[in-house]
Length: 202
Image (cartoon, rainbow, N blue to C red; front, top):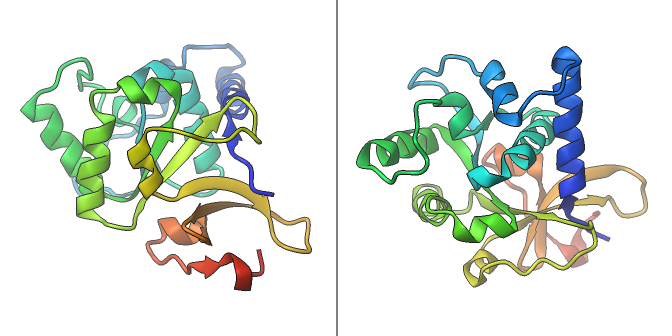
């Protein structure tokens, strides 16, 4: 049975990354800044992580969870520390557009805080127009078996889940929606091989 990622998994990944970094617990934003490398306009990302800034600790954990699967993740306040997320400006919008053009997919981190974000709905709409079919929603739940019910428009997009392949114990991360699925790996490569549930090996 497919389950969602949890806030506790994200916090554990963030805490593990923090301890491994220096054996001293630091603020999530500080860890991300230390990881930052100079980003050229030509640099590409596998994932543009759309999120609420109030979820900083969760964002760090999700970034680590995705990186553990070999994905290069863009987090705006990590790569572009000069951005002021509290102000909506044409300069910030243009930089985010550029970063989205450099990204293969957008993952919308769905939490309670996402519904109050100024930027997330705009990022979602822009990216969907830019690369239709390359947007997925990643619900972050209190319990992995919780039912996800985000804003109504999020139902248009596939969800990121965890599951095992049918008749095996092999675990993987999937993108699922509208009766079909693909792996997160295939989805982010831009070549999802969508399978129907009834005929799949999952």
